[in-house]
Length: 221
Image (cartoon, rainbow, N blue to C red; front, top):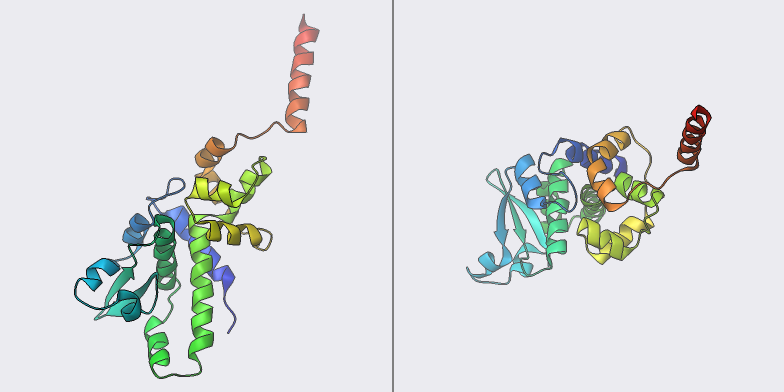
């Protein structure tokens, strides 16, 4: 099954533009989840207080979004670093926003159906692309690069609050994401953040215009 990366990126772009809780980077992913869903949060520590191993019960070391009686509950490992927890929140929100049929996926897994693995891989790839675009928009990263910033894992971790692993994935796929109708809108919304991180360097045309202005002033003397 082929993952729909365009849909994942576009959905993240729409949230970036709509979200009142996103004004710059890094931002509170938990607030975004609350703004766009009715997801409830439960930590692994809370779950383990009731008995048992949370990772074994949930089936993940990081977390998972489960549906029960019409409620969506996001179980997450509160012992993980904050950057990893934030990405988990974004990833699980991606499953919801991309309308992934997690109930069917669970049923396929429990039935040991051969369709489980390809569908699971598709959903996971799409949710991860959504999460990466949400927490570290490619449009903003590219603009920072144009302004002379050296895009390294350390730079992205510092300014976007992401893990080194997440930053490395973003660096590796910077050249693959297509231009879209959202690009200018996203750059406009986050212009303040971009300006704070990297002042635009003077271009040749800027210098030429200034020189023409100085010449006009000299001619007026």
